[in-house]
Image (cartoon, rainbow, N blue to C red; front, side, top):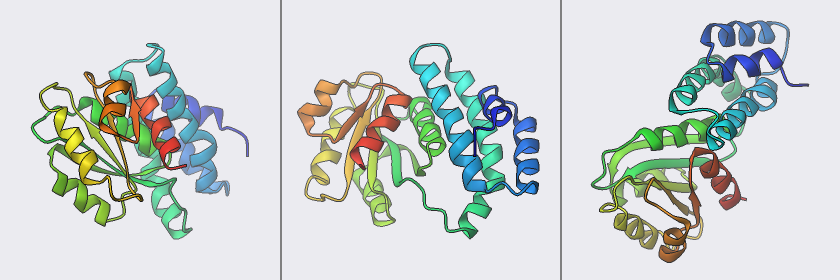
Length: 206
Protein backbone atom coordinates (compact mmCIF):
# COMPACT_ATOMS: atom_id res chain seq x y z
CA UNK A 1 0.00 0.00 0.00
CA UNK A 2 1.42 3.38 -0.97
CA UNK A 3 1.53 6.49 1.15
CA UNK A 4 -1.85 8.16 1.52
CA UNK A 5 -0.68 11.65 0.65
CA UNK A 6 -3.88 13.33 1.84
CA UNK A 7 -3.63 11.70 5.25
CA UNK A 8 0.08 12.49 5.47
CA UNK A 9 -0.48 16.15 4.57
CA UNK A 10 -3.46 16.49 6.91
CA UNK A 11 -1.46 15.26 9.89
CA UNK A 12 1.50 17.50 9.06
CA UNK A 13 -0.89 20.42 8.68
CA UNK A 14 -2.74 19.64 11.89
CA UNK A 15 -6.12 19.29 10.15
CA UNK A 16 -8.00 17.06 12.58
CA UNK A 17 -11.29 17.07 10.67
CA UNK A 18 -9.61 15.90 7.48
CA UNK A 19 -7.68 13.21 9.34
CA UNK A 20 -10.88 11.89 10.88
CA UNK A 21 -12.67 11.82 7.53
CA UNK A 22 -9.79 10.28 5.59
CA UNK A 23 -9.22 7.53 8.15
CA UNK A 24 -12.94 6.70 8.33
CA UNK A 25 -13.28 6.60 4.54
CA UNK A 26 -10.14 4.50 4.16
CA UNK A 27 -11.40 1.93 6.66
CA UNK A 28 -14.73 1.78 4.85
CA UNK A 29 -12.81 1.05 1.65
CA UNK A 30 -11.23 -1.95 3.37
CA UNK A 31 -7.77 -0.54 4.01
CA UNK A 32 -6.25 -2.18 7.08
CA UNK A 33 -5.67 0.10 10.08
CA UNK A 34 -2.05 -1.10 10.43
CA UNK A 35 -1.38 0.01 6.85
CA UNK A 36 -2.77 3.47 7.56
CA UNK A 37 -0.60 3.69 10.66
CA UNK A 38 2.66 2.39 9.20
CA UNK A 39 2.46 3.81 5.67
CA UNK A 40 0.99 7.26 6.28
CA UNK A 41 0.55 8.28 9.91
CA UNK A 42 3.93 7.33 11.33
CA UNK A 43 5.77 8.79 8.30
CA UNK A 44 3.88 12.06 8.84
CA UNK A 45 5.08 12.37 12.43
CA UNK A 46 8.62 11.44 11.37
CA UNK A 47 8.46 14.23 8.81
CA UNK A 48 7.35 16.67 11.50
CA UNK A 49 10.23 15.51 13.68
CA UNK A 50 12.66 16.14 10.84
CA UNK A 51 11.22 19.61 10.27
CA UNK A 52 11.53 20.33 14.00
CA UNK A 53 15.19 19.27 13.96
CA UNK A 54 15.84 21.57 11.00
CA UNK A 55 13.98 24.47 12.66
CA UNK A 56 11.41 24.34 9.86
CA UNK A 57 8.71 23.54 12.43
CA UNK A 58 8.27 24.71 16.01
CA UNK A 59 6.54 23.54 19.19
CA UNK A 60 3.05 24.80 18.18
CA UNK A 61 3.37 23.03 14.81
CA UNK A 62 4.33 19.80 16.55
CA UNK A 63 1.44 20.05 18.97
CA UNK A 64 -1.25 20.59 16.34
CA UNK A 65 0.20 17.77 14.20
CA UNK A 66 0.16 15.52 17.27
CA UNK A 67 -3.49 16.34 17.94
CA UNK A 68 -4.34 15.49 14.35
CA UNK A 69 -2.40 12.24 14.66
CA UNK A 70 -4.24 11.40 17.88
CA UNK A 71 -7.58 11.95 16.15
CA UNK A 72 -6.66 9.21 13.71
CA UNK A 73 -5.26 6.97 16.43
CA UNK A 74 -8.48 7.24 18.41
CA UNK A 75 -10.27 5.60 15.48
CA UNK A 76 -7.80 2.88 14.60
CA UNK A 77 -6.37 1.89 18.00
CA UNK A 78 -9.38 -0.27 19.02
CA UNK A 79 -9.14 -2.02 15.65
CA UNK A 80 -5.41 -2.57 16.05
CA UNK A 81 -5.99 -4.15 19.47
CA UNK A 82 -8.57 -6.53 17.98
CA UNK A 83 -6.11 -7.52 15.27
CA UNK A 84 -3.37 -8.17 17.83
CA UNK A 85 -1.13 -5.44 16.45
CA UNK A 86 2.17 -5.25 18.34
CA UNK A 87 3.72 -1.83 19.07
CA UNK A 88 7.36 -1.18 18.22
CA UNK A 89 8.09 -1.37 21.95
CA UNK A 90 6.90 -0.12 25.33
CA UNK A 91 8.58 2.85 26.96
CA UNK A 92 7.99 5.14 29.91
CA UNK A 93 8.94 8.79 30.07
CA UNK A 94 9.03 11.32 32.86
CA UNK A 95 10.71 14.49 34.06
CA UNK A 96 13.04 13.56 36.91
CA UNK A 97 12.54 14.21 40.61
CA UNK A 98 12.60 17.89 41.55
CA UNK A 99 11.81 19.09 38.02
CA UNK A 100 8.31 20.21 37.03
CA UNK A 101 8.95 21.12 33.37
CA UNK A 102 7.09 19.04 30.82
CA UNK A 103 6.96 20.66 27.36
CA UNK A 104 10.04 18.85 26.06
CA UNK A 105 8.91 15.59 27.64
CA UNK A 106 5.50 15.93 26.07
CA UNK A 107 6.99 16.44 22.61
CA UNK A 108 9.14 13.33 22.96
CA UNK A 109 6.13 11.31 24.14
CA UNK A 110 4.16 12.52 21.12
CA UNK A 111 6.92 11.56 18.72
CA UNK A 112 7.37 8.13 20.29
CA UNK A 113 3.67 7.40 20.04
CA UNK A 114 3.76 8.66 16.48
CA UNK A 115 6.61 6.23 15.78
CA UNK A 116 4.51 3.27 16.88
CA UNK A 117 5.62 2.88 20.50
CA UNK A 118 3.35 2.30 23.46
CA UNK A 119 4.14 5.19 25.80
CA UNK A 120 3.59 5.45 29.55
CA UNK A 121 3.78 9.17 30.34
CA UNK A 122 4.68 9.35 34.04
CA UNK A 123 4.46 13.14 34.23
CA UNK A 124 6.86 15.30 36.22
CA UNK A 125 8.83 15.00 39.47
CA UNK A 126 9.43 11.28 38.86
CA UNK A 127 11.48 9.32 41.36
CA UNK A 128 13.08 5.91 40.93
CA UNK A 129 10.05 4.20 42.41
CA UNK A 130 7.78 5.64 39.74
CA UNK A 131 10.10 4.50 36.95
CA UNK A 132 10.42 1.11 38.63
CA UNK A 133 6.64 0.69 38.71
CA UNK A 134 6.50 1.38 34.97
CA UNK A 135 9.16 -1.27 34.34
CA UNK A 136 7.10 -3.74 36.33
CA UNK A 137 4.23 -2.97 33.96
CA UNK A 138 6.35 -3.77 30.92
CA UNK A 139 8.39 -0.70 30.03
CA UNK A 140 11.50 -1.74 28.11
CA UNK A 141 13.08 1.70 28.11
CA UNK A 142 13.07 4.60 30.56
CA UNK A 143 13.35 8.14 29.24
CA UNK A 144 14.41 10.78 31.75
CA UNK A 145 13.97 14.48 31.02
CA UNK A 146 15.39 17.48 32.87
CA UNK A 147 15.40 21.20 32.21
CA UNK A 148 17.36 22.26 35.29
CA UNK A 149 21.06 21.64 35.90
CA UNK A 150 20.15 21.10 39.55
CA UNK A 151 17.94 18.10 38.71
CA UNK A 152 20.31 16.48 36.19
CA UNK A 153 22.19 14.51 38.89
CA UNK A 154 19.04 12.53 39.61
CA UNK A 155 19.41 11.01 36.14
CA UNK A 156 22.55 9.31 37.42
CA UNK A 157 20.53 7.92 40.31
CA UNK A 158 18.06 6.40 37.86
CA UNK A 159 20.81 4.97 35.66
CA UNK A 160 22.57 3.41 38.65
CA UNK A 161 19.32 1.95 39.97
CA UNK A 162 18.67 0.07 36.73
CA UNK A 163 22.30 -0.75 35.90
CA UNK A 164 21.89 -4.36 36.98
CA UNK A 165 18.76 -4.85 34.89
CA UNK A 166 20.01 -5.71 31.41
CA UNK A 167 16.47 -5.82 30.05
CA UNK A 168 15.86 -2.11 30.65
CA UNK A 169 17.49 0.78 28.81
CA UNK A 170 17.77 4.26 30.34
CA UNK A 171 17.96 7.24 27.99
CA UNK A 172 18.22 10.90 28.92
CA UNK A 173 17.58 14.31 27.39
CA UNK A 174 16.65 17.90 28.05
CA UNK A 175 17.93 21.39 27.38
CA UNK A 176 21.05 21.27 29.63
CA UNK A 177 21.82 17.60 28.95
CA UNK A 178 24.67 16.65 26.61
CA UNK A 179 25.91 13.42 25.06
CA UNK A 180 29.05 13.74 27.14
CA UNK A 181 26.96 13.77 30.30
CA UNK A 182 24.98 10.75 29.07
CA UNK A 183 28.23 8.87 28.48
CA UNK A 184 29.63 10.02 31.82
CA UNK A 185 26.74 8.58 33.84
CA UNK A 186 26.43 5.44 31.73
CA UNK A 187 23.07 6.13 30.09
CA UNK A 188 22.07 3.87 27.19
CA UNK A 189 21.17 6.75 24.92
CA UNK A 190 20.73 10.48 24.49
CA UNK A 191 18.51 12.71 22.37
CA UNK A 192 19.14 16.38 21.63
CA UNK A 193 15.52 16.82 20.58
CA UNK A 194 12.34 14.80 20.07
CA UNK A 195 13.46 13.41 16.73
CA UNK A 196 16.82 12.28 18.06
CA UNK A 197 15.10 10.77 21.09
CA UNK A 198 13.01 8.48 18.87
CA UNK A 199 16.10 7.40 16.94
CA UNK A 200 17.93 6.74 20.22
CA UNK A 201 15.10 4.57 21.53
CA UNK A 202 14.93 2.61 18.28
CA UNK A 203 18.68 2.05 18.44
CA UNK A 204 18.67 1.08 22.14
CA UNK A 205 15.86 -1.43 21.65
CA UNK A 206 17.38 -2.84 18.49
